[in-house]
Image 1 (cartoon, one colour):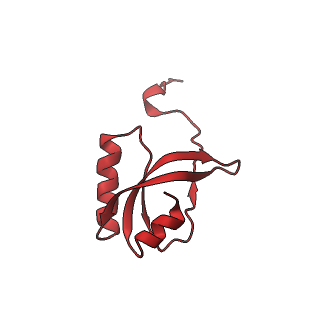
Image 2 (cartoon, rainbow, N blue to C red):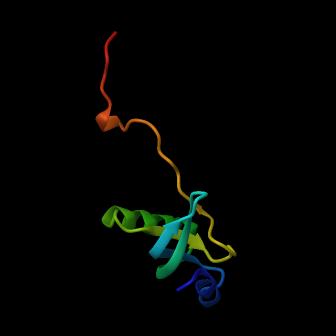
Length: 93
């Protein structure tokens, strides 16, 4: 489904969605071309909790928690720069 269709079917609700097909635009915005609704949640806290549970269980999948009052999804990718802790090397001077 598209976001516009989801908004019509699920007005004014918190949802857990999965990006089935997506791409990143040149300005680092994530564009969801095909979306699946996984769950309807009572509130934002429930949506965040369910998102964390799904993300922990399936880290390779692309989940989001959103409210359908948003006319458009504005998802931005962050560019991580630096060294991850497990690869850091301690140097004594």
